[in-house]
Image (cartoon, rainbow over all chains, first blue to last red; front, side, top):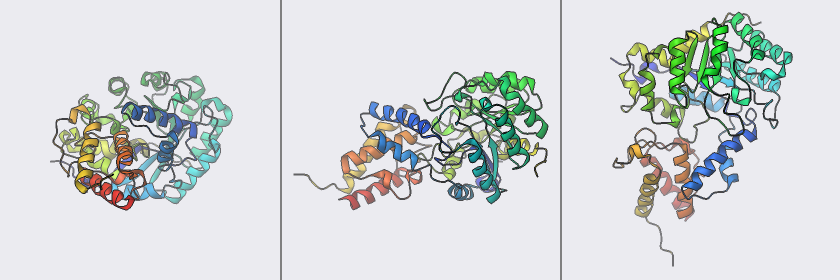
Length: 316
Length: 91
């Protein structure tokens, strides 16, 4: 017996996505990504202007209020999406909005679609006490659901400056999503290793940590963390960047109760739509066909729903 | 003198572009119209962008301007259909 797309429809939780908007992603971040694409194309003998390539990517980042994403979710059978807002504003100084303004804009999205979205917000720890207050306000007053960290901005997820944020997460039952692996060359790679989460995960055993993109660059290390550290999970977002068979390696590690579905919208928009990404996971070629119904439901919605349900309701 | 591009020219060109971007794990497969670019041929966003620029180089048709967006081109047949439409409107 297996869960069919019809049985999953409307129940799927996308545990890793972003608002597709140039308002929240600095141009330098996107330009860095485009530079790598340009190099890869040139290696195939394709010469194109970087501006044209950049325009192609920028065109996919104009869904500022999530109208398109909401439509895509309905089409794909996704009932709820976790929107992650990383704070690039300290590391990359060309952001068009302050992190405070970005949080307000995400609050508007949540108010517009209170059931469709859950918001995880990040504040760079180097903003100090103001940043902690900003995060606490987002949690207590706006009802946001977690902390999003982007260590490639130049800090370790176990940096002591983050501990006040983790105290808030512990007090309110909020999970933390921390990026792992590659990213735009505008940022650091040395702080993107999943083992850097370990000290914080040990010091805050009641806080659940989710290693973002755990099935890609650092599959072995992320699987090990999930197997041995009770409060560490991983999401598979960016699985579209590799052969789907690699997910078979991940699901063979005995940590299926720790693995969370995520699409990383809008990063792979040129590759396909949200429905096509779910169809790929349920296709005959997918290793997920070998999963038991309970494992499949845990992956697609139950585990993330359980982590979100840990939130202690406190917002005004 | 430049000869007019036929439908067959376009299909043959698309198959050539596809073979150039299909990863080695999928390379032995015979390409069929109903095949999924993503799951059956292993083509990612970079592969799609490469095909788009190849098509523009050879036929002057800009796949990136397809109103449905590259994300809606999911199968070999989708790709060929859109390429035919764009080449037709370009010529």
